[in-house]
Length: 114
Image 1 (cartoon, rainbow, N blue to C red):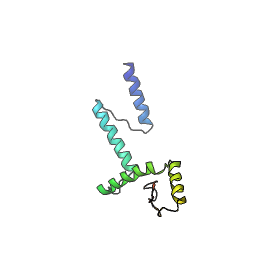
Image 2 (cartoon, one colour):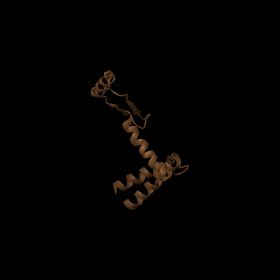
Image 3 (cartoon, one colour):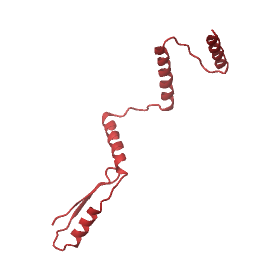
């Protein structure tokens, strides 16, 4: 009975401080109480003004994926050597470059025509 008395004493102290104490009998009941409290808190702190459309959700997912890859560029000397070799060869045709603006892609592709 000592445990029950300590628990009741704690509940009284918490209630006297102005905090809410909820009683429950089963783990399912406490889970529901916790879910309700968390949902209420999240709705208050992060209210939904409008739900994104399926297309907007898809675009956000793609943008997030691209952002994780757009910040890293690993250069390879081989590419620069090939460009230099091409530019120094007077018999080669002009080349073209295709690039995507950040954050969509950090990659540029160069087309050499010899």
